[in-house]
Length: 404
Image 1 (cartoon, rainbow, N blue to C red):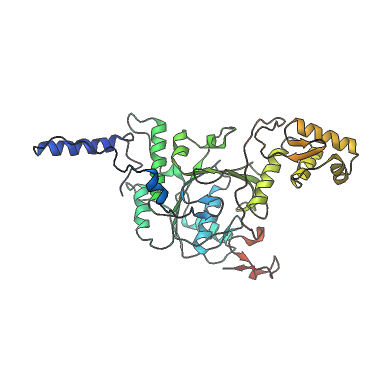
Image 2 (cartoon, rainbow, N blue to C red; image 1 turned 90 degrees about the horizontal axis):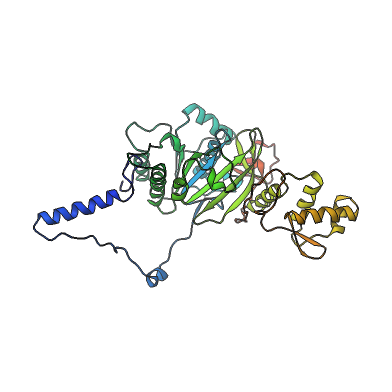
């Protein structure tokens, strides 16, 4: 396959320059004047661009995982492999992931940290012992001496229908060392560019890559990507999955070239199943904002924040007093303190509203901040739906609730 390889240790531009120099030498040896490559080959103008019609951006997981090269980042052993396996099975069968409906497509799962028995056990848990879909294809090993991009390219040659999904779990298993004279940034950018080039080989394709975080706190979640900024800078989309150890509550943060930034509250149920904390992405985004806005607050202040979040048009001290069962002066004091700390806005006298962003909110004992925006709406069928559609007429404990 054409393009940069993981194991190509030349810095960017060197291979191309060498090819041009070789062309020049061949021309000179044939008795012709040395030729100069057309450095403006491919130059286009705005008139040409204005006339083009491009297909809309497609999503493997609507609102969360778009087409292109996507990097999923998180600490070890918090459930990243469970997450990508959920997406893989949902895509292979046309099921659900995070409670969101997924359109069927060919799937290649490079489960390089698993074996057949573990993979079978995990699939059966996620599918509630329903048959594992035939459209789910996987490899647990890559033959020595064969780069992963060649393996993916060979599989892609067999796919001729829907845009495929390829999952690499994990990048660390195929990450090459830096070459002679190559900096860590150049190595990371080379690898990230290879991932992007693989994804660009097929319109609508998603290449989802699992990668560990750098085990350091930062206000910008992109800084959590292990390695230099070269890797995150080269791929199209970065998703950070986080949760405290031994806790079910977590967050999913998304940013990229073609998708709006978003943060969604998620939960890791029973130690293997990821779902939105809310009925859809809008509710999960609101829940994430509430969690961040109430971090470090006492119970009563957190209640005020949540009440204001449910009433974006604004609340008054009288309304808060009635909702919380406190005297109006106490409610006014809570609202005033929350406005002073930046957790609530005060657009006019006596009225308090949720802040559109909590990036500048001062937290007690936590200086972290992040901008949150809504990123679309996808109806969830709830926690019981798992990977198959939940029939509404079936009771939650009815075995017949799972249907393809």
